[in-house]
Length: 422
Image 1 (cartoon, rainbow, N blue to C red):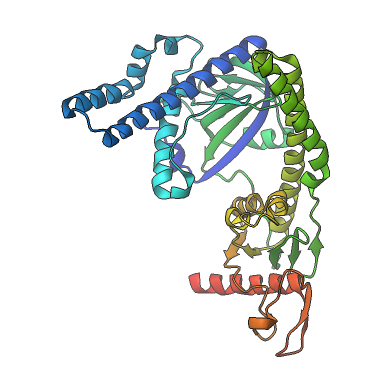
Image 2: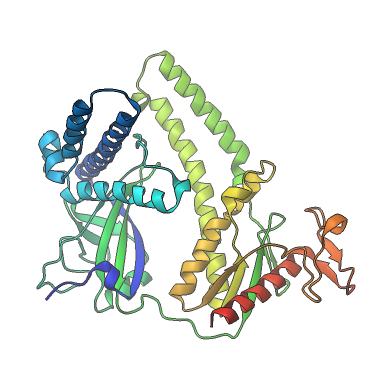
């Protein structure tokens, strides 16, 4: 009987756990991360050289022979291993090399679909390390979290390819729910070491039964207007303040970064490798810790806020904002980035699917300038600016709070959009 692929499952779920490798396991992770980066960069180098031939006026026969040699070098995993025998080291997972090649091909596919992402570039060596692997399921093997060479042994231990038994930590409630499910297939596994030298394993899971039960209907609907003055204002008249996590740490982070910069300059003048300069590494960890603190607090706030909106409303509507374009305004760029609007919208999108709710993103055009009562649009000399937080409609005389009025318009547009699609 043929095994089902990950794409064939009705539901998909991501699980990220913290792992605690031994010193030997850390070495294996480093070997695989280095091999992954090397294979990816080899593909980048080969294709860049092939692209350069079109700009040179040299012998055609030489070009054809050289292109053939280059393409043969990266044609298969075996060809790479023949050219670079160190890739056959027993610590290196063959799946990590295969995934590196696949990621390079996906990068080109993404470029052809969305040109703004750019072409695949050289991956520099940094303090962050990662690689991907996949479990092996035999055709006669039962699909579950406890079979294959990548599996859960118990609530505190994993079995991973090459790494073998390793301790991990995650939410007991989430694990108990997953362990109780009949059939859960493990897909791609990403092993990561972050800038704080913490290790994580991310699992792609697939199943035909939902990972989270749908929330009961509330018959409640809400529109959300994201803005700089606060985090958002909703159509019910409530306003959620922006915690401004980056602004709180801005001065302390800037001081730490300047200190790191001075230590790097000093180490270079003394001709010391940066990775061996203890003072540089100590200060780098401090900067990474402050940055991670900001990111984790913001991420926690966005998760809690998005979950509250989705669980308590059948329909959630918001603006389809393009943060990258808005950040071209240098006066507002820091505030926009500190808000994390794009992440928030992505969280609302996937959580709506997860909990059986509806999330609709609408065009933000004139949502602020339009009166939600009579539909009058402010224009010309009467057009509202960012300073105008309250205004009165010249047509119907209705007094508006700027952000709450916009949230009501957003909700109305979302209902119209749903009515057209049904």
